[in-house]
Length: 166
Image 1 (cartoon, rainbow, N blue to C red):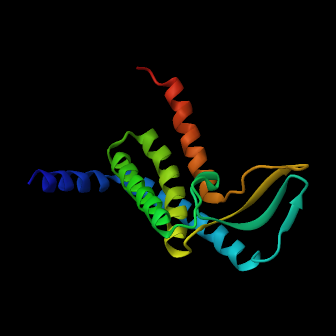
Image 2: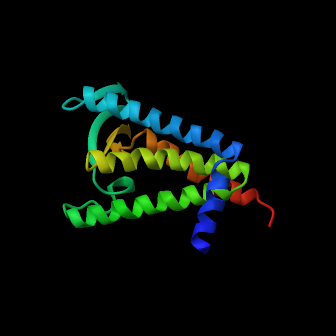
């Protein structure tokens, strides 16, 4: 019974005007990521595109998590990691629904990017990364638009915590 009351309360939080606004923001971020990845998947399968001496577009597939960490050929492990990522996104959505306005902005950035990469894990069984930053022979980890949003959201969250009054 308490679970049903909790679900009803959660639904009421989600239907607040600001939550609907920030949910639209999540959807926009998700579609920006999808558009960029779709373009790269369709046009950069076997070719690298040189932009300048600091950036290339080069399609690689990441079956791990951030920076290809935990990459493995094990289907079971991949599925467990994907399930864990899905649960984390659901927890973030719950926190998002109950948070203050500034936190809703931060969580919406992270959730939008997270959903983009989660979608790829489900549909493609890997996340297409294509932004290759480099200087001479030093290459940073290849990443995508969703990663930019996730990282930006986390950085804003960390910076915000430095300025919060306890």
